[in-house]
Length: 483
Image: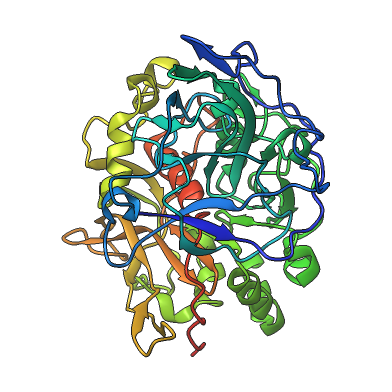
């Protein structure tokens, strides 16, 4: 990985989030051997002498030529006479975040735009004190003593906190400064992506998002209606998985309106079935999806919602079809997949035992998959399988070809029978690039088919990792032509 600045053009006015977030408020911003304790940043804190927030965005992007030693900086990034330590957590305050960027700068950061945008990548100057969190979320940041803004970012989640650091000190940042925010409140140094959820018929993704910290939970299991920090759009018939909270409208209405689409950074399309996928028979809707992703949108699709990936992006994948219907909507099966990505595996390995095995939390139903067999993970409720992920080649602007097609994070045997064969591994969780945006697909439900449970199962943990990973900046290559 290479450390980079994310350049943002035309930042719009930000809006203040209204929901409380899950953080450990009792922790001071600084705690340790020495140093002052600073309060939460205010609107005045985030304004410099020119009357507006300043400072570039920091993010990370993949280096196509392989990792750069010391982030490309001879001797490593710039440091100083003081050290800050801490651990970065997801908005729920429990899940550690690997690969987050932590950096110091003298002024407040610009933050994240409140609409879809293209976050392209240029290299980070070596004079900037910065570091990446380890697989367990921990970090050590060397920086000059005095007053600094400490910024923590992963994807489109960002928190900025002003601190005072004593010379020759080693201090620990409290979790109030290192927990990614669950609400968008720019005046308080908090930015989150704006998320839309297409409420489908079979996959309770709203519970997984609440467990990530984007909503309140009832008995630690299911979303408390009305507490969600994302917008819901209906994409189901009501017979299966009936709507339990207020919706903004139908998913068809959202996809038909480019201005509405542009309000969101991430759109989740969990499992649903026909006739809802038939709305993609409208070429205008398909084109709206493509343009939104090209502009920087993050588009997540799971199992039977595969048409929402197939129709806008047909050249990226082919599907296994069953013998009796000739379609890609398979019967459900369970399998054991293999984690292919080293960073994902290292993060899963580093998780505390109570996060890798939730069965002790669920004595009424202690049969959930665990992480005990890494790099293999048990996956349940799979309803489709990608057959091939051909290269998708685009010009890099210098006459060379770059493959922006699917990256396979997890692969595993199919279900056999009328679907994908059991005797070979197939892509089960993939991501790909299109313009300045990304797509993410999983063959399995993100949430186990059940009445709710405490904690996150392995496939939910993988999703949480990928939600944050697909938000990082990228090179905005010209999209491939549509067949």
